[in-house]
Image (cartoon, rainbow, N blue to C red; front, side):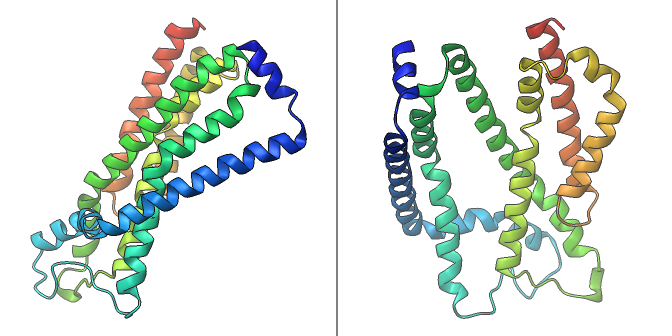
Length: 248
């Protein structure tokens, strides 16, 4: 193992560039292949993404449309291509991460390799958990926003705007759900300790609530609440884990 690391460090610049080219090429081919597969099933993917919206529209008194609309003729083609490209990136992510790992692993020490696997796996699981949570929480906030004007106006959901809103919400939840990984990483590096985090608990809680209000789209009170409550729970759990794991 150490010999592999030594060989990785002794590689020339040209060899590193060749290895990087290989990683990028394989990752790009995986993305293209996954995108082509997503194009074949784009109808099912679109139905899945529109389900929070159609659920909300089904509960309201909106009799004009039961799903999203598009106003440009080209959107009938560009929308499926866009969602297929994003779905392809998600589908190719395991291959991309594996290629990145093969590129950086030779230069890591054994102790660093020991921590990378659990941290990457935890980060992926937390991001997926945050994205799934956002998907199921979205109808609550969307229902508030779509019905806030009452009978004064009719909500005609543009598909581009809706998908952008959904993607922003998924990314916001997915990224902020990485809080435990960040806290534990800072603890492993010795930057923070459980004692320090406990002393700063009130300020951290306020920062979490403020961040939830800033990163969530829309103006409803439900979505940021659904974000900062689990984040506070994650923070407290991270402090307990740091306490037991590092004994600080």
